[in-house]
View 1 (cartoon, rainbow, N blue to C red):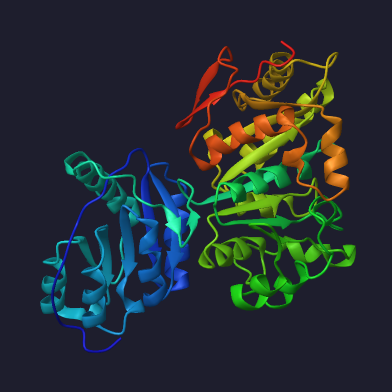
View 2 (cartoon, rainbow, N blue to C red):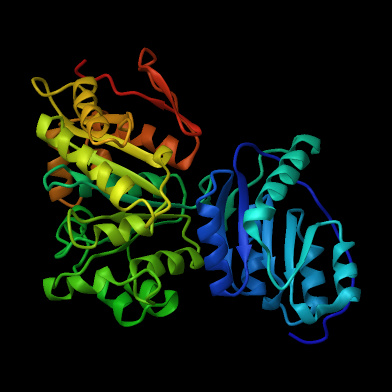
Length: 437
């Protein structure tokens, strides 16, 4: 940072619900902002940037607001040139040596909605940012649907870090994780699927991938360019980081969130690399708490049996009672999937009643509603074991995955099951599974 003094450019937006944010600045600053905003349902962080060129490229995300630490620019001239290219509402933090002349010049630019020196108190400023962006939406003319693509990929309605979890083996958790990742990739969203089970047999088998390179490459070089990019394998448009194959190294996945080689830092590096969806195939035990801590969304997979309803209730208690200060997943971002339903097993209502009774008995309130019920489709196992996409196993399986994708990733195909009940679930409307009722 040098020269700090100068002038010029343009505003506007349009959209609804949560404010779409882009964060830009040094990694430590962006990480702090991200952690704060992820816990605030009024905001959706679409992506991050840590250098000016990347920031300019990511204007194609069409963020409604940009929170920017100006120290990533060499001086006010370069900062001003950038600010003249964006129509987003920009809230900029200037270095304290910038001085009044620079601050006034930057403040007069049309894209600037707020200027702060040295730091910003988000707990105080977030309400103002939200109110101003909403006011801009209401004043703006209707725009043709803005492209939400990162280059050619479509961006989801906000960064999703999804932990797909079950407290017992055999629920089909990895199958659901794989299907949701394939669904996101088919929608044109830049998606990374990460295997965290040790040894990771499922993802290489289901996606017909090699067991190496794998997550060990990240542990030895925890950066995007050195640890993620060269170790990713691709299945069509989907990128996959296969899990470890050596159980001796499993403890490496339980590092504290601030450790450079932790799961949390893996997620942050993946988002720096342009991924809009990161799906963690989370193990039953071991690193599950680390995966949950790094996520903002949970898919809880279970099977329609009474003991599994109780186990799921206990898993929910574990995540939202004993671990409540260790993650940023809101109760409205927990999606329960009952997998492998067949006649003679519990209906979704019976299963949910058992899980709900358990959580209320344990004093943690109601259990989340069932988002989807997936029938037991034999063709799914045949597809998975042959390395063929599980989404080709038939509409009985692909249909629920597609509807869940509508909720998680935005968009929405129509369903012929119009008689199903629709629930309000956080900011979303979710079709409640009635299979077997």
